[in-house]
Image: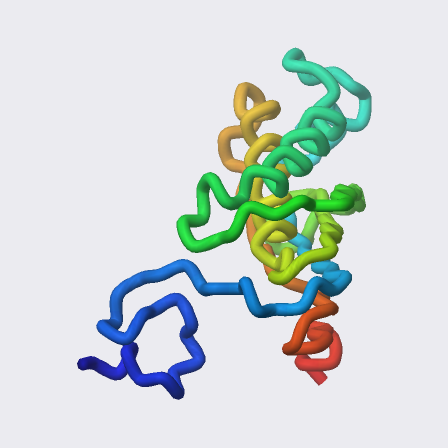
Length: 175
């Protein structure tokens, strides 16, 4: 037996032999759970201007990206192997346009925030993170014809609540 098979190990996706497993949540209580994740996509100012003016040939970039993020949250269990399929009760994707170029990079950005809710036996952190990831990837896909140099960063969890482990707030942890 290796260290992963140790029952005191906080990594719960391993069985006694140290092999991957899906965590058994059958004895967990159904509670209201919420997760909020964020991420950024950075681009040339001209690309952001085209998005704002609705001039990207593939269509309304933010509307399509918003739908992609919602779909990503709903399909997380299909792409993250150990995630449970969940009956998500709410997904909201919002955007903050940051039109002023960063003085160091010359790039503008869009901040994406995804809020996902469920009443269930396991949390929705992965669904919120997947929603953000799918949203920024869709923005890239919609705009790559005019700006292949777009980059993503700062994808992470801001908040989670519900369940036995309680509440996590990134702002509280960073202080």
